[in-house]
Length: 231
Image (tube, rainbow, N blue to C red; front, side, top):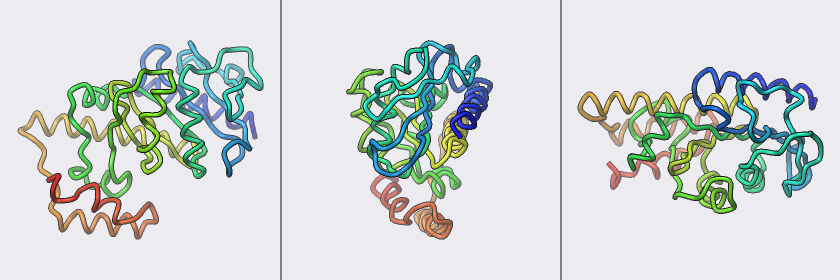
C-alpha cells in the first residue's frame, strides 16, 4: 500500500508540474496512511528542495503527527506544519496539496476574492473558495492562519502564498486544485470582458439544493457564502 501511494504521489506531482501549477521546487503533497483520530497514522510527504516534476517514489519521506522523520534520506517539506494542521482538524481528509496556481494566486495579490456566487459548478461542488490572512510561509503562523478556513472548506487560498486543497484521496485533492485554478482563469477573463455577473438568489438556492442532493455538503453552506449582503 505504501509504495502504491508513493507512485500515486509521483503521478499527481507530475500532473501539477505539467499544468504549471507550481514553479521550480514550489509546492508539496502529502498522504495520510491510516485514517481516523489524529496522531494514530503516518504521513508520506514530499521532500524539501525537489521539484515536483522530478520527484521519484524513493524521494518521498515519512513523518509522524509531530513532524518527526520516520523514514527517508531527504529533508521533509518546509511546509510540513501546514499539512499536519490539516490532518489534525480534518479527520476525513487523507491527502493535502499545497500549490502555487498562478492566476488564483494573483487574485490574492490583487485583493480580489474568488467569488463563490458566479461559477455554478464551483458553487455546487466547492461551495466557496475563501482566502486566509497572510502568514509567513513555512512557519507555525503560516499554518495557523489557514486553520479555521480549512476546517470548513476543501479548497482555500493562502494570502500571497498559493492554495491548499484536500480530499478523501489524492486524486480528489488534485481535481479540486484544477477546478480552483480554472475558476480563477474564468473570472479573470470575465473581469477583462467588463466584469462578472453574480448568480441570482434563486439560482444560488437551486445550486445549494443540488449540492445537498449530491451529498457534497449542506445547502446552508452555499446560502451563507452567497448571502444577499455580499451580492
